[in-house]
Length: 225
Length: 258
Image (cartoon, rainbow over all chains, first blue to last red; front, side, top):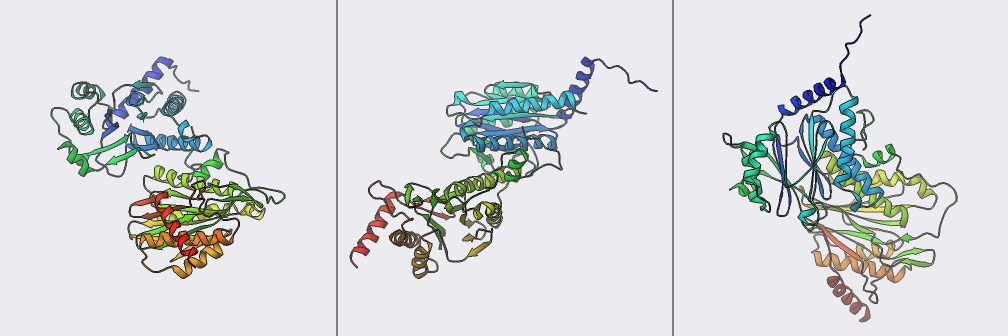
């Protein structure tokens, strides 16, 4: 009879984390930042149909990087949780903090209990009625939640992009300036990203109930111009 | 957080999701209930820009007026609206679920249902209400929308069993529908302008209110006017009360001069 080798839990967690990080770093990165009228999301994504950024609820959006089928399943779970809560209670009761906690629970559970951890990082963002109440919850493959300010970078190349964002981005920027900063940070010094390779969306403070809006490539071109 | 295995996944269907998590409404059993609020007359007509929908504001419970400012004609999504007549409780719940279903589908699938698909979805919801309808809690909607690709308005009405019928000219439902429908039937013209269509639906509601005690007319005392809205390439646009005041004043003048 063969006995399984003893693997200490520290090693097990380390292996899983490394596996997840490897998977995530194979994909392309994503940046989200506050701008004067809301929150902007910019992702490097050549596909025009398989989205990384999407609407969850009236004031809440979702972004994911890594394995598409995994973060899309998380996105659907988020839409369901939000719609159910809004149906059962009231639309105002749906908030990003509670969603982020639910995501963290689920991803943490999958990280420790399932065959393999999720190879994704996600962002749950919510606009408040004032910029001070904007929320960016960055959730890692193991369920770690980070409540971030100003901007958030997801994906394998996060460190250099974070540095570039720190210099390129300034608080209170309008949409055009914020978009320029994000695109510059995503591309870096040696690479300019083509408009067709960008997926851009915003949740904006305004009059309509549903704040999520995709920014199509013609508008992206004019904003970058 | 609702997370399903592929075989258990309800997809973009919100009602299926509700039943998976145990939040779906159970059909009513037992004796018929009659003295609950009922919502009444709703009409819709096609015009050159799309569709105009209108509904009075009264709800009645038996012989009493239970509400004076009901909104039984509401926006369903950007390019569609729904009006409903029947038992107010199930009717309002059906509208709420329908609005949610359209939004839920759009978010889950990343694109909107087609207009035909929305009309069909509503038919399923009416049919699901049939057991309650047999107990006297029936609710029957009308559905109107603008088809951006075909640049025209379309209308549907339904029966209690979920039967779905597309109409080319107009629909009228509820207790005042006989009178309202007759007024529209006589006054309807192909390619009407928006203002003519608004005048026609208001006149229809006026005559329904005049002859049917369960339909409310314009309530000048409280400043409550019927809900009237157009659905065109600009989407759902409510007709403002200021315009309705003028429309009803001209109707009153016409009636007085007879």
